Image (cartoon, rainbow, N blue to C red; front, side):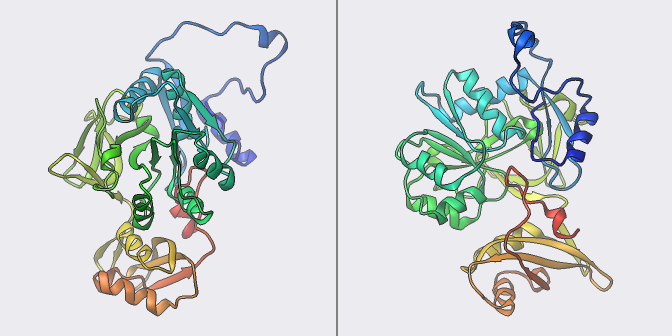
Length: 362
């Protein structure tokens, strides 16, 4: 089990009890323990890692992943991105989340190098990209935005940068396309051992906004309710429902050419005055305003409306509330426009960069 060192002592103790850990190793072994030969026997179906989900909408859940899951995920990624013996994959994502750990497992399976940073330090990451030190990278949108703010412009050796962990603002996609940077949107989760759909490099600009086609051996379906369903050898067996599918909790669609478009979480729908409001849709409109750096939308209980559409915005300048609401009303039905706006210096995110929407209303 990869330990999350950023947890409080109480949270960490809870996770250790919850997963049934019998031994915790926090430092390199030495003495008699360090001299013990590592085991060589491998049961592909046995538990290889126990990883907790991000907990963005509730209590984190443990997911048991096998060697088969990691191997299938590595194969699918290699099919899409290819493998070069000289590859060096930049890892700035936390190793206690599947996105970071999978960089290490893929590199070990391929026999290539991983460049590991203990945390995301914008200038150090910029240097690694601009110097040509790395050929692959995995980032989340907030990291890319910080790189843009630091003046990042080129990455001469970069073959692909996977961008996941949530919706990607269109201004970032446009910024990358203007510089011919191979930014590939991807979709996956802990239960699928990382990515299950990713754009190919040649499609990065023309299919901006899509998560790409399903990777090899991934089977995707969309339920009658619009939920993304997944199955395949990279999916944790314990995560499958009785019908044989992983129910992701995400809304999406598959277009006529087989590309996946992710619309947001099923739970991220506000019912205001009897009308359904998609949080992600309102967020996308807000982020199209030049003064909005990023936005998050939630429903706040209200005795008259049921829930009020409420936006939390990080702003680049002092734009007025009336202008932002008018901007939304020009592009959305009136009932979808925020009724309340809160200005914040940053949005709450976990160590993997995912929005902690529940903290906005707590």
